[in-house]
Image (cartoon, rainbow, N blue to C red):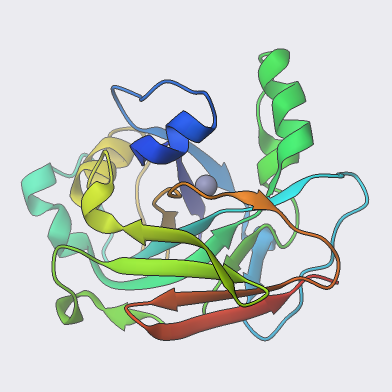
Length: 202
Ligand code: ZN
């Protein structure tokens, strides 16, 4: 399986990063070794002094597809979950300055935290609300209706370039409120009021 992540899919996050709002989706990938399942702790890597959380809705692909038309994209997924796209922001800034790829900042081991639970998409309306609390205080609130590119639009765009396979995960971008973590922090993600994961930074 592969992990595809979307950059800048919420206007308020693009603004907080002083980045432009993209005219087509921006995506990058993480390897399967990046997955960190709930119940495991996140060990702060020593190559970064500024690891950020990014809480994101995650879509699981359930059908192989290439060149998927947006109007048929809904047939390629039926479950959604919540995850964290951990980012070494200091390394990412250097990569951006040098116009280098982002992998060292985005694709390291355990950088794709994910709930163990995936929920049938039919349980949700068009507005899927989620939030992240750090040490009990809500730091990010997201609403899928605020995505610049919808899940269906993302699937259409990605599948122009890359065949999607059963089990692939798409991290759909983060809303505003990203910030750094330090050892001892606890991160709890909630989807429509339901706790989806709890990670401790060690
Ligand atoms: Zn992200």
